[in-house]
Image 1 (cartoon, one colour):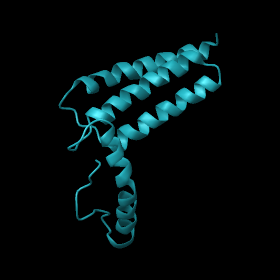
Image 2 (image 1 turned 30 degrees about the vertical axis):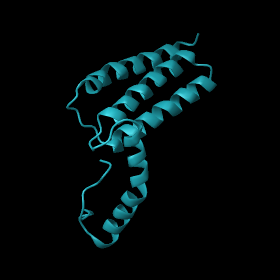
Image 3 (image 1 turned 90 degrees about the vertical axis):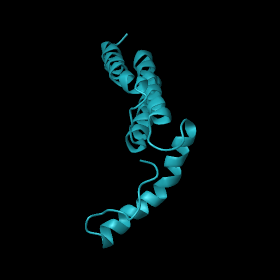
Length: 119
C-alpha cells in the first residue's frame, strides 16, 4: 500500500466528520451552488483515485461525495428536496448564466430583478 492513499483517506474522513453536523441539522440551509459542485468534485476524485489503484482514497472520496449529496438533497433552500432539488438547480443554470451576462453588460451591480430559484 502507498502511504499517500492513507493520507487522502484521512483527509476524506475529516471532511466527512466536518460535514456530518450540517447533514444532521434540519435548519441548515446550504446553497446548491456550493453543494452540487462539491458533490461532483468528490465523485470525480473517487473515480480518479480508483483508476490509480488508490482504493482507500477512492472510498473516502465516495464518502465525501455522499455527504455533499445528502446536503444538496436535504439542506438546500427551496420548496423541493431530494434529487428534484438537483434537477431544479441544473435547469436554472442557463437562466443564471444569462442573468450573470446581462448583469455584467447592463447592470453595474450585477444584480437581477428577481430572486434566484436554485440558491
